[in-house]
Length: 56
Image 1: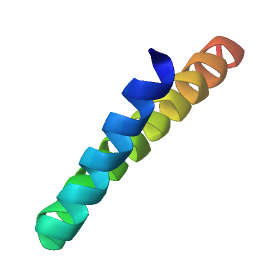
Image 2: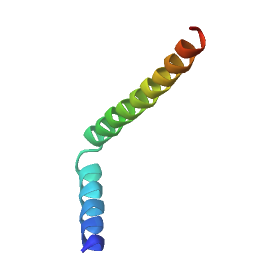
Image 3: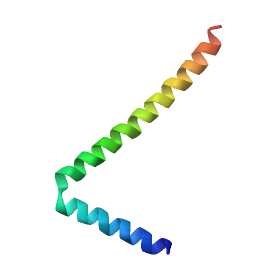
């Protein structure tokens, strides 16, 4: 069952890229922005956490 789901997802992704490559690129860039923003925010959290506790 898991293998079937993986193949369906791969086929759908290929269809999406072939059918509308510009929109597919926009989706990937938007996801990258979300992931990068999350990583940056986690980094900021830990930076504030450690610098705030050391400075007290």
